Image (cartoon, rainbow, N blue to C red):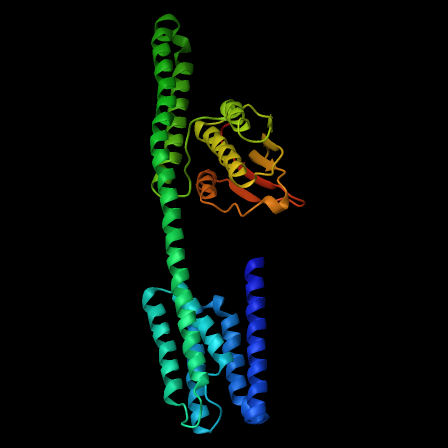
Length: 371
C-alpha cells in the first residue's frame, strides 16, 4: 500500500473511532450506557469493512449494507436507539462511495440503491417520539458518499481517456517513424546489393561475404520492424526510431536558451545501437528536460548522463530544484516515456531526491547480437 493510501486509511480509522466514541457518549447520556452496545457493535463491524474495502469493494459494501439492515431491525424490535446511527452511516457512506467509484455500472448502481434502501428503512422505523435526527444524518451521509463516488468516477474516466489519447498519439508517431526504420535498413541493403554486383564481376570468391552482410541487414530490418509494429498492435515489446545521442547536444543547447545550464555526459556514443534504441534515449532526455522547464523553476543546474554497461543503456536526468518548489510531476508525458521504454524491455523511475531535486532514470537493454 502506498504512503498516501496508508495516510488516508489512518485518517478514516480516526474519523470512525471518533464518531463511535461521540455516539456512545450521546446514547449513554440520553438512554443509558447499555443501550449503546448493539449500535456500537454494528458501527465497529461496518467500520472494519470500510477500512478493508480495497480488498473487495463489492462484497465489503454488500456486507456493510447487510449489517445496517440487521441493525435497523434489531433497534426497532428491541426498542433501542434508532439505526443507522452517525458512526454506522459514516462507514456506509465510505463503502457506498467507494463502490460507486470503482465497480462496474450495474454493481455500483445496485449498491447505491441498497444504500438508499437503508436510508428509507431508517426513516420508516423512526419512532413518533423521536426527532429523526439519526435518519437525517444517514440520508446526508448516503447522499455525500454517492455524490463523491460519482464525481471521482467521472474524474477517473477522464484521466483514463486522456491517458489513452496519449498512448494513441505515441503509437501514431511510431507509425510515422516506422518509415524511418525501414528506410534506414533497406537503404543499407540496396547499397550492399549494388556492391555485390561489382564484387561478382571482379572477385567472385568474395561474393559470399557480401551476401552474408545483406542477409544480416535484412534480419536486423525485420527485427526492428517487429519491435515497432508490435507496439502499434498494443503489444508490450515494441519501440520507435529516429534521433539519438548525436542530437542530444542540440537538444541541450535549445533547453539552455530558456532554462538553467545543463551538464551533458555521454559516455557511449551509441554507434552500435539500433535506431529504435537511440530514439528512445533521445525521447527520455527530451521529456525529462521538458518537465524541468515546466515544474522546476527554481532549478539552478541539470545533469544529463548517458552510459552503457552490463545492464544495458542507462539514461539519467537530475535537477537541483528546492524541495518546496517541486509540485507533482505526474503528468501524461511520463506515460509516453514509459510506453517507449517498457516496449523495449526497459524500466523508468522518476521521483524526488533527498534534500531537493528530481531524478528521471531509465534503463534500456541492448538487443541481443548488438554491441
